[in-house]
Image (cartoon, rainbow, N blue to C red; front, side, top):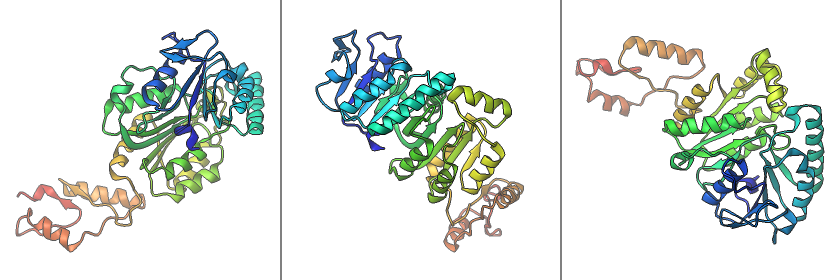
Length: 358
């Protein structure tokens, strides 16, 4: 999977010199952050953005790992064959026009999957925004927001989003609000090949990632995903699309996803230790919070500091009802707390700071 994030050379199929085109932004972003060799491909140009442009893939003078595809869907089979001749390992397909548009698109997508499997090429997407790495500053995406490069900073939060424009909007929202940096942002669209489970496994092993957020409309391999959630102490926060009948129907036309039984999915995720949220703001808030703690599976329990005795009681009850133990504070902690409590009141847990200055 690493060749998607750290490729040895990339070709941009559909690169453009027109700022109104997505192919312009893909090339511009790659030139801004990626340090390897970049090969724009478009027969209309000899040079784009001061970079040599090639009329087709076969004209590129050397092999490369990754292709970013942003031309009409019907040309993908020929692109896969040409990429195989250059020993390409993966293709990020940011174009739409595949299974999400109906029978003919689904037929084309299945043809491409079969062909890529035959040629040993992995497919990311289609119908997606691509990926962003906050540490390497590799931005393999058509995202054209002018504030991206000012706001993008490395951090420990990674995201897997089964959408194109939502991932773009969500990324800019959390960057604009601040409080956390990005390790990796992965927009996977129809996930015809690469899916959320494979990326989750990669991010669990990624030393730059401490917390992982997902927006998914369907789950390709639920047992695999549940095993991954159980295997790690990294918090995994999931927003599941298609909870309602109308939402499930919309998911089918959005990314060709069969949303499945939401109730079963929700309970399964909870059993696996994932944290479920119900809107993008809640997802952002929990990711921001977990980015400061790195883990939520500590045997030490939870400490409560409150200005109100009743607040401590309510919080203790809430933790108990969610199966979360209250921390046992050490004698050293109580000794330190006694320094700010009145002599006549020994500190206890929950720690009620409202009385500390009485």
